[in-house]
Length: 397
Image (cartoon, rainbow, N blue to C red):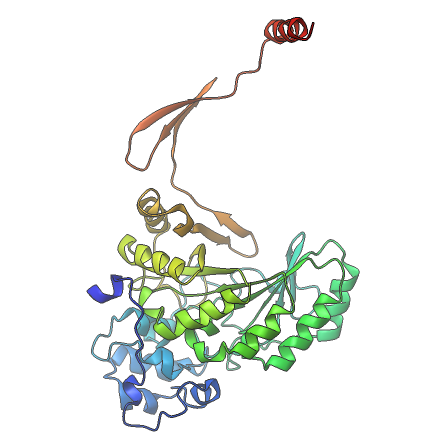
């Protein structure tokens, strides 16, 4: 772990690996997308790959494509194969092995899809899968079955049937746009989607799930923010796992979104060798607050095929939450959740602070291990209530 990763500083890494190339268009998100690292040759030109990584890249084309924006690639440590950024986006040979408990659709989305592209798992909200492409691809992606276009399954969103389903189901009040990454769309296309959703009266608010502010902060332009501002109440959930990801450029992008009145939350995944320690998680959540982002969820890594080398024991997630509680502001503490396999939904997992419970009292443990007794509410006896009424009556006489 690099000591500077735990410091509350925001650093620009540009141009980094691209120092010898023309970078006058570095701040253009289109240039960033055109120059993504997406082949073994690209990687070997810039990094000293291990045999484990080289084999992983060769296998990746059959499962989940590799693609890394120059901005995010610059965060990789060239000489450290266990670099926490590197482990997130560069394939490893372990991806080719499926543990017995792993599955292609660990969250059971396909079985809760009344219309292709629309997942209705919870009573009042839906997940709308609007694209299968991302700026970069996380190696633990829970939708690797459909994302990036190289797997056996393909996303075939049916737009009009999806909109009609939303119009007909008045119990739905919340729509989450995801995929893939919706912020890869042009301003105009995204504006049209949001406008159509806003024409449905019972939809109270819209959310967008995106890693674009982290992978491609150059995409968060003033023009994009002005367009999004038209569609309030609008929320954005970003995805960042390590404090090194919060660069100077990312902070600017997040502040633009916040200045447009968009509440921001972060969703992290606990990953082995990336952020599976209290020290890294504390640095991450504290930097997020400095970027005006509320740490929202901390996920146990889903049981997606080929992810066992990144998954951690559930007890480590509980220990991280316990290591944060009381040691940093409550605003910085996310909710640790496990997505119940095959469609169980998000299940909150918390340290156990209730030591014992008995009639009339609960015994509690605080973050320092001290024990406290808290009395449960006691109903007022009828005789006391009558006495109070008599006193009140005498005062009014």
